Length: 327
Ligand code: CP
Image 1 (tube, rainbow, N blue to C red):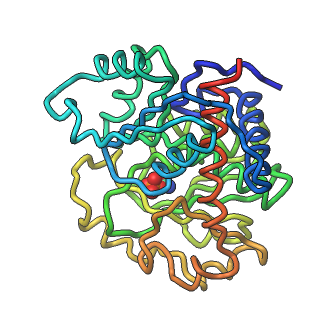
Image 2: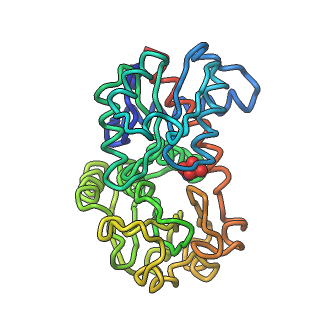
Image 3: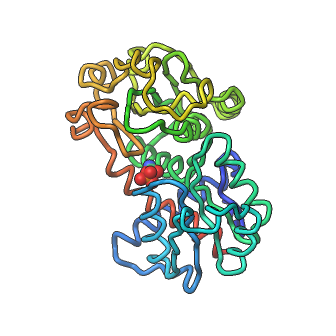
C-alpha cells in the first residue's frame, strides 16, 4: 500500500499509480465512516487551501470547503474574476504567492486549450500541492468519487459493464473532462467500458490511446460505438452525460445544427429497459433534466446520483489529507 503522498499534485489520475489510487479509496472510505460516526478528523489543523474558480460550481466548491473545515483546516474561496488574474496576472505569480500563504492551491479552469495548461503552469511553480478542480481535459475529483461509488454499489469491479454515453443538453457547452477521466480510469480496474457518442463528439485521440493501454494492462475492455442502444444493452452502470464538440469545433456556441440533430440521445425509461435489470444510473451533476435524462430515470430507483455526489466530499477530504498532511 502506497503511503507517501505529501506534496503530491492532483492534476490527472493518470499521474497517480494504481497503488496510490487504491490508498486514496481506502482513506476516503475511512473518512466516510468517521464522518458517519461523528468522529473528529482534525488531520489538517491550521492548514489553508486556496480554492480558485474560473467557473461556477456547486459540488466541487462545497465538498472542498466543507471538507477542509472537517479536517480542521481552512478553505479560501477565490472567484478569479475578482483576482488580479482579471488584469492579466500570470499563473506563475499567483502560484508562487499563494504557495507562501498556505498549504495547497486548488483550481477550476475549464477553458478549452487553456485550463490544463494553466494548472500545469501552476504545478511548475507552486511549492505546495496543486489540485485540479476540473479543467478542459480532466476532472480527477469527480473520477475518484465515481470509482468509489461504483465500488461501493457493485462490489467486484472486474468485468462489470459501464457505459459512458453522450447525451443531448442545451444548458452549456460542457467540458470533455468527466467522460475523458472515466474512460481512462475505469479500465484500470478491469471494467468493460463502452463509450458511445454521435459524429463530432470525439474525445482526443491521445486520451483514447491511453484508455486502451490502461485496458490492456489491467484486463479491462474499451469499446467505442456510435450506437446508443448498443451501449445501454446489458450495462450494469450507465453514465449518460453531455459533453461539447470541443475536439472538432472550438466555438463557444452551445446550440448548433450538430447538437440539434442529436436530440434523440437521451436517457429514457425505454433505454434503461435495455440494460441489466439491476442497472445503476450515474451522472456527475448538474444534469440537464428532460434533455439529458427523463426525470423518472434520474429520480427513479436505479439512480445513484446523490450517493455519487456525496462521495465527492469523502474523496476530496482524502486527497487533501494525504497530500497536505501525512508523510
Ligand atoms: N460534478 C461537479 O463537478 O459539479 P459542480 O460543477 O457543481 O462542481
